[in-house]
Length: 304
Image (tube, rainbow, N blue to C red; front, side, top):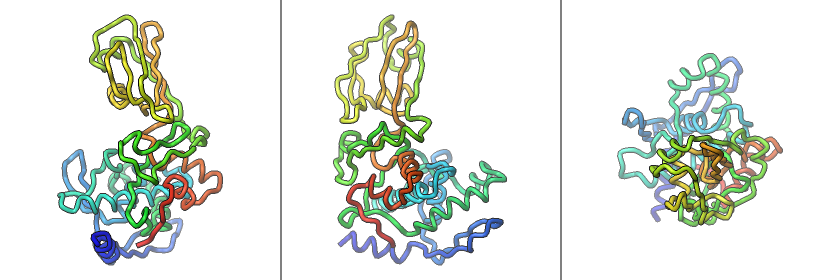
């Protein structure tokens, strides 16, 4: 019953907007007939901004995915971002804000910040993003009638992850799928980090030792490190990821003389939509709907 009431409210409040026809020399404008907004907490200032709903999606696309990506990949990201914030709005009705503007939720960049960032390229880039938002307007994903947890990340390790192996909660639509094409397009599919022995131990708050002994004791089905021992001290893969500021928990650690080399695969938590996977699929001719169907298994694309 609550779900029906919530969706009914959204149908009434989500802004119906029209836009000018796309003219190369003019910026696309959104015109709202209602003032449905997202309460965005700006982490740098602590202020809460009320941002018109679809303008918020524009700001997320600008913050979360390179504008250079193919349009179908941008559309897939727009639907994922819209779904994600709808889930947050529903969950945070009693809070002062719906969502934060960082990777803790979704990166959001305001229009003023984008104008400053892109300068003379602003109009060209903002119009491309707005086309992706317009072409998917009002679309979101559900699973058996419920808005999904539309998680996404940058680059897989060749496969995406089962949700319960990363976040403990098992969700039927967040299953591990092949995403080996990420390697074809992502500049961060493989990466390497080098530390001196002293810096390595300092970051991990370990006593200095001339020899680094690594024992990986638990991994996910794709090889991400869940638990390991470093000189007999227990860490989680997430600990190492944070303390060494790595790209992912799929890593190897090797001592080379007085240095430590850490090699990583992938970028991000690995659950849900792979952004570079979406790019690769778009380049192969897949539509945004096919991309979403692939990464969010068994979900339904609905429109308010």
